[in-house]
Amino acid sequence: MTFGLLDLPAPLFDWIDSALQIVLPALVRLVLYATLCAWAMMYVYLRFSDQATLADTRAEVIRTRRALTEHEGSFADLNALVRRNLHSSLRQLGLTLWPALIASLPMLIVLPWLSNRFDLETPAAGTLVQVCAHPSAAQAMLHWQNATARYSGEPGCWQLPWPTADAPIVLRDANGTALCAISASTKSDIVHKFTLYNWLIANPGGYLLDSAQFDRISMTLPTREIVHVGPVWLRGWEPWFFATLFLASIAFKLRWRVL
Picture 1 (cartoon, one colour):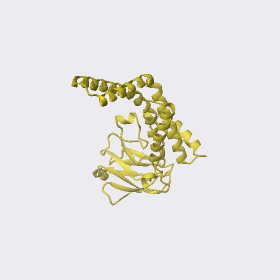
Picture 2 (spheres, rainbow, N blue to C red):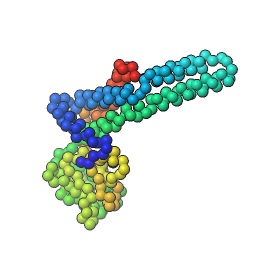
Picture 3 (spheres, rainbow, N blue to C red):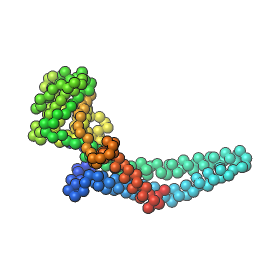
């Protein structure tokens, strides 16, 4: 697997999660990771924000808003109050913007790893998986090595048996050039050409050769369920992680009285 800048801590996270999964179910681990992420975000924000200045600025905003509400004087005085309120509000925004952007880094680092770790299940070897080329017209120029592929009912799609651990399946063009490979451990449902975005976040499924005459291939892989009851949208990792992140962030904000 290749790594982008935000993926560099992923091997450490994988090691920690592999150790914890021996004693903790996936849902509990997700709640734990969300709580730690909320703590890190709030701590970084507190560390880089000027809380004393923010308190003074917020008090000024409240004073000017109250003065605007109670104002019964001249239009010139009203204009001055409006300018004061706007200045204070913009200053408050400026004081919180950069600390908030810096505080988002822990989440930006954790989210790609969570997606790679908890999004999809790896099919068992031999399980039929639908794989599609985009655009579909490219299918006629392509063939698979180490797999018995057959065309499915959809344009540009094959039915492929999932590879074994020792024999990845390789997509080749009409000249026999290897364009990409799918291994048994692949947990990405799309393979595409490398882009500048991938310097930050890599595609765990790898990349197509730049000379490929098509844009990407997509695979229909099973979605991992964290809980096995309730509506489909509630079974993945996302609602549990983000709900915990939201609630834990509020709790830390109130506990530390963060502005």
